[in-house]
Length: 317
Image (tube, rainbow, N blue to C red; front, top):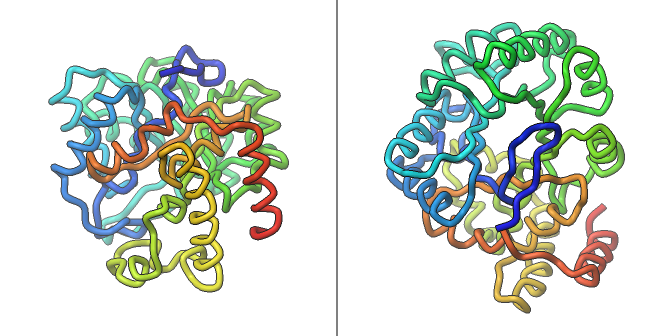
């Protein structure tokens, strides 16, 4: 499995990483619904066994639970993947999630404790909110790097101008934006900025939270549990739902030529962009991981990429 260096760091990443959002479980604002912890641990083990060498989580996923599950999984494997997590989304006793960049130092200590590690390989500011707190918080992030609590520091969901502001204080190793066939806005400014400034890009939601896997149906969407955030997401509502399932069907036909799923094609499409270092791919079971692992090696030809671009131009605004 070929690896690619992340920005200005010494981290050599497998083309896809294990995304630990969904394994946080239910009962919080951005849940994917109930999740079995044993399935989560099996999914992580399968990903590591198949060559994935990094895990991306966040303190807020499951309000700390995802980090705890990552720790449990790493205790029972000989693999030593890079562990990435995030700060800037906190919660209160009512389990309400809030944007807050003034608690970064407390947050890193909590994440180190939950993850049961001495240092975090990549610590990322989850959202640039509140905007006026970016500079002070990024200064704290830089201090944490100097102190050895984190090895590298990155951002997530930042605009080019926000990254520019942070860079005046300390270098940025990476940006983590959403990027998929259904969400391409970062192509205009953010990806070129990252490429120019040697900021690695690890994109999340390459399959747009399951829409482009080829396994999503209208019936499945209708039966999402109430605490699955996707039940209320715009792209899961009509008329966009039918359009999006049409995209999945189209790329599924391209995948069928190679014996891979629509989801693998969707991931490969994001990795085709030269500014993208690697993609975050979620997995809720070992079987799901096995289904997407071909994305670590499958690549679209230029002709196939052009074919997809032409379809998107006609069908997706």
